[in-house]
Length: 92
Image (tube, rainbow, N blue to C red):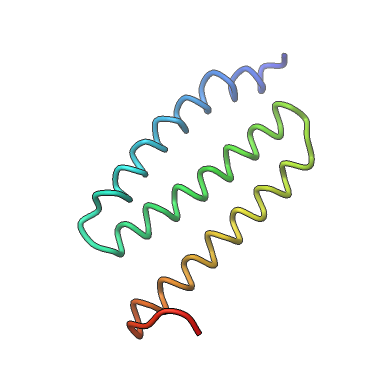
């Protein structure tokens, strides 16, 4: 393993794992709906970062597509919740 892979495996991944727990805690117990949505967004973007790091470690370009799909899904969640908070209705 190269130095970059060692740093990714033993420094970045434990920090990301700890942050996931904190993001999910805020998403579950957030004081307002906006805080919960923001925590969910950061969680999704962090998971996509994890997929990117994992794709580097296992040398798999297919996981890059997973990161793109996950980021687009998080963006769609933002649009949907923003519409709900603005108008108070779901769908359409």
